[in-house]
Length: 465
Image (tube, rainbow, N blue to C red):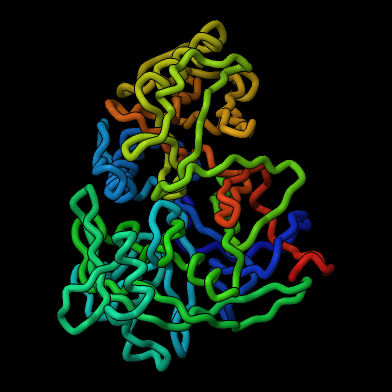
């Protein structure tokens, strides 16, 4: 298993040839003393050598995750799962923020499936005191920041949050509050505060450090269930949803950042990656429209191709409603398909490789015994979206390596079946090693393959406004 501390910043081995558009908020997640850095290094917990990760454990982690993700979309709170899970073996992307005056550091999970940034507060009941990630946890203390203030029920931001169920008012103390009850039985509640977020902006290739902006975020005073566990504990959750209380929406409304953010999450050699508030432009980017009026990042998936052949799946399987559709979520480890789509997908893969490898079932999962490279044997998969955009998946994007049997490597289908639900969830398995752009201003999501180990270097020209 990789070291559970933030990696030292790598020397820049090559120029990141992607262009960052407009005024960009760039955050740093590597543990570097002496200031808030220019790019966001994301740390991921994954096995390093053994690859003996039971899919049941990852599915269980995703089940807990989906309880949170789907609680507000038609009441879907649980998925059929097999096995158990070990949190030390699941992927987790998180970053470091600096908040307050003087600023303090907080590690927060990056979550495109929720809206609100919340952090455990000094009066918290149930907040973990230590983390198996070997990071120092900090509780936010409103009294220790000279720029902290409470958010009242009459505040316009609180009223906006009420519309999206992200905030509420009990009348007691006229204080804007929140309660998030998740499908796995865990939850958090607290009240909203406003304080300064420290960040860096990039203008025409130059870095301006120690810029600040006021943001509203949750101060958690109670955590229950899985959130109380210390094995993969962080200080809070950094919601990147579309609603008004997300940090990206708040900064955009202040004219500080465009209403777009991008990430490139590395899936190899210990993980990590880059996150920016802004748009990364690459020549090979393809875009597909967001489905409007949905609480999450829903896309219009039209079909799936395996080895260039479109699978025979009823298009209604992928249609979007309050209880079904295709969701992009960085907080999900694997990927999930509805019954009909999953069965057709696995059958097509197995039929393509059955003459070359030995198909086996392992704890209910379709696996294969392989003695050569998966990229030489398994077909390319294409997820085909509205507007002609296709997300191309190479074998490592839909297979998960398991243990070895008799000298043969065991690789299993990483896509899992969601029984009885017409939901497709695209998690880290397919999002990794790609630039993903969430262009909220133009209501679209784009992507392209990319080597996410490279750092950002911003060209010194007039691309920035």
